[in-house]
Image (tube, rainbow, N blue to C red; front, side, top):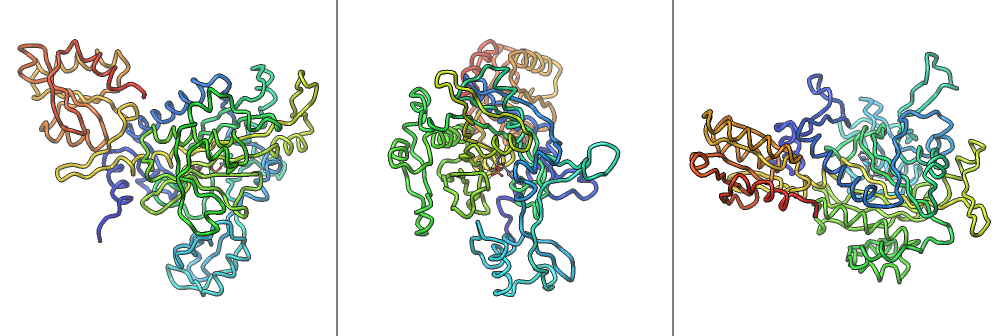
Length: 499
Ligand code: GAP
C-alpha cells in the first residue's frame, strides 16, 4: 500500500532523529514524543519567533511561567473538573476504549462536532457500530475527564488532589492581579505563557496532532468590557489589508464552502463578536503564514453554538488542511469575564481593576489566542515537504530552519578541514546555527541536509586553498555560487534575517 504523507513524515522524522516516540526502546507510549537535536532546534526557532512577535515587539504583553500542577480547587473554579470531558465507549470483549465521536467519524464519515453524549449514543445504537478491532459489542457512552490527576504530598487524601494543567491559561488568571499591579499595567494588556500542557486523550493520533503532552503558547488579552472594538489604529494597520477564507456559522448551516473576506469587511459586517477578537485572529493567521504554513490550506472557522467551550461568547479556529483533513491549528476565543469572575468567587479575592479616570471597578473581558506548538510543527512539515526525483526536502523559511548553514570540506584533508572549522567558528560567533560534516560523499551530505531543511551549504574545496573563496549552495535551487570567505557574514546576515 502506498505510504501516506503522514507515514512518510513520521518515518523521515524518526530516521533523522527529529521527532520520535518517547520510551521508544520499550515500544513507545501513544501521545508522547521526544525531540532530537534537529527537532529541538526547530521547536526553539518557532517558539522564539512567537516570543519575538507577540511579546518582545509588543509593548503591553507580559510573560509569566507558572506551576504545571495546581490544586483541585483551581480546576473546579475554571470548570474543567465538570466540563473538560470527552465521551468514551468500551468494547465489552477486548476492552479497548474509543472516543465516541472519533469512532463515529471513522465508521460513518460524518461530522460530529458539538454532539451531546445522548446524540452520540443514539448514533452508535442506530447504526449498530461495533468494536473496529474485534466486532465486539460496545458499552453505553460515558464521560471521561481528560485531566491527569495526582496528589500533592505524601498522602493520597482528597484534599491533596491536584491536576496537571490542561492549558496554561488558568495560571494567568490566578496571577492576573499580581502581574497587573507589579507591571502597573492598564487596559488593554496581555499576559502570555508558553509551556507544557497535559491531556489524557482517549485516542491520541495523527503524529503530533493529538498528543497527551504538548506545548501551549497562549495570551490572555484583557480589555475594557465597553471597549472591545477599540483596537488602536497602529495595530489595525498591520492586519487591515489581509484577505482570509472565512467559514462563519451561517455558511456552515448552509453547508457552503468558506468565503474570502477582506479584514475591513469582516469588521464592518460584524462577523466577529468584537474587533479585538478579529484583530487577534488576523495577527495570529499572519504569523502562521510568516512561519511558512501554506495559506491556501488555511481557513478561519467559527465554532457552532453547540461546540463552543463553556467559557466562550464567540470562538474561531484557524484550521489547516492536514493530510487527514481540515482540523484546528489554533483557537481564538472571546472568554468574556468568565474566568476572572469564577476565580474571584472560588478564592474570595478581588480580581477587578479600579479605573481611576472613570472611578469604577470593572472585571476585564479576555480575548485568548491559544496555539499548540506541535500542531504548528506538523502543519509546517506538511506545508514545506517536497519530493523531487532525486531527493526529499523541507523548504523551511531560512529564519525558521533548525540549522541554517551546513559546512562541508569537500575531502577529508587536513588543510580543507582546518579552513572549514575556522569558517564554522566565525559563523558560530555570529550566532548562526551551523551543522558541520566531513564524512561521506558530498552528494550524500547535501541530500542529508536537504532532508532536514538546511537552506545553505558551504563547501570548502581545492580552489579555496588558492583564492580564499568557497561555494554556497542554495537548498531550493541547488545552484552553487562562489563567495570570498570574508563575504560570508554579510551574505548570511542578509539571507537569514527574520522577514
Ligand atoms: N486555553 C484554550 C485552549 O486550550 P484548545 O482549543 O483546547 O483551547 C488550543 O487548545 C490549542 O492547543 C489548539 O488549537 C491546538 O493547537 C493545541 N492543542 C489542544 N489539544 C491538543 C492536543 N491534544 N495535542 C496537541 N495540541 C493540542
